Length: 479
Image (cartoon, rainbow, N blue to C red; front, side):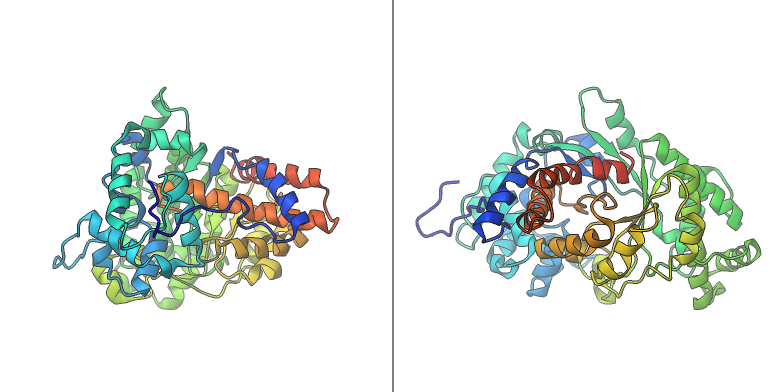
């Protein structure tokens, strides 16, 4: 777009995130230049594989860039914009979805509410680099920018597969329910015109908590998908093993698990079978204490299965899901009100790690939204146990400053090879290159800080940056 004289320019600085000191900045440029165009490895995300398999034009700018992105939704909601005005369906049936242009205007009018946040950083990079905008969004230019992006989305160059290639994505992992048929993944794998790689990830959180409202339904549906009776705990474990194998046959290399805490104490076969049977009798069949010990045992069994079948086990405990019940009831989950909890790993994971922490081939990637545990727990665990890898800053702490703190905290104990590579964790497809570029710049700045203090040579810094974006995530996630 052509910039008007009264508009604020949108021109991301080429040295953004680099140090003010000229020497450190020069080294950071060298390190960044070595990786800025490297292919993207995205081992943990939430883009739907059918989006790429179907390769249909995106509907409009708002449904692509705003409505599915809970990072964006939560900040707009915090500044007084209702979720119904942002395109989220009102489950009460009383609301209507506004047109995309109206949703876009809400973003433009609240643009300064994102100042200083990683969301603003990603958006600026994305709007400039992907869509060619040269003005900061505002109420004055909202309609013109909406029309500009909508016009681009109608062109073949902005279809999902064309963007996959333009973004330089080598591997993209999706997140999939245990009952998913993975048809879209199969179509992509069989399509000779698609040269990328899209792999599923096995996500079965609901099966861990027998007090959950959907637990019985989920257990039954897993049994149906596997063709195995899940009326017993042994049956459930067998069905989960079968579904994991189905995912492996479709290219999966990892599972992903979100639980409230990392407790992993195993139960006897008799006790877990008893609680399973009681839970099947109804939501009131188990006590709160029984639900907790069942969940802890399931986490232990999950690691046991990973040792058996080789799937990488991603674990991210410590999030209070759906904190605001009225919002959950009206708009459903993933609407911005999941909130961080205090993290803990060392003692909760001790039973699991005593059994499997040195098992050959087992990979356990630990994520947290409580960065205080990086230096106190995750780094030291990764610095001893062959199985443990330090997951990158995620969700509330995937910010430039937090990435630097993570590197400082983890490197002391575990260096670089026992980390995950960057995790974009996004549903917002077009933000993927912006998020990875931010991480590459932040890592270049951190590595440059070690060079100028003579802790690392410039050659080692460049080589390490190249490994962070390539062979480290490939090795950690068995890609």
